[in-house]
Image (spheres, one colour):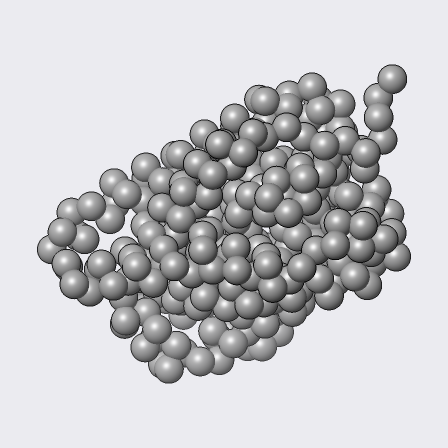
Length: 304
């Protein structure tokens, strides 16, 4: 007899979790190697576009996700997983997809850098706020006794510290950075994908049993995320060149970080882990399809 998804705890041994933390730290280090002081200075040259993208990620998307969970009425752990994914920062694959889409890569890179820095504080606060408001997920969150400060400390260790070290490394050793940044980015992303595959493979029976419960929610949620980015950019008057960057930046969430937090703070809670695992693959597929479609036609506002 199949257990309710809210009662399932997926398996991921402590040693593997430590290694996954290291891989994520390496991923953030790789992002930082590609981040220059100039990326932060660009914020001063395009403050409005940056503000729109940040607001879409950290305010509009979590709020819209909350509403989507009320409409779909998934199980509490699935709803909490959707909220957690929505609160995650973007991954650096968003920069690659923005380039493929013919969008503003400078804006995308800057948003990735700023968003990951802000996520150290905003992610645990957002999860606690929206999860605490949810009628069915809130009791589950209280039973876990999530401490936003503890989660914030964990995020600092696996996002903040490697990010700062990567920027310092790039500034001190620019020649070496140029040689290793691309291989480091590819290797860290490949390791992250392998770990997501390992998490799914190690709990394959659970994913087969429960994927049907989350696939529609993930597909709708992912489409909503891309749509929110594009709509916010359009409604605020940004040109197509910026709209594509903002849409992809809001649509691509770091599901790998979500999995780390789910195994580290939520005990591998079934619905949450299945949502993050399915999102990790679907998000890349959907983002690649959207970027390829956009890339077929020039974007309005793109410098010639």
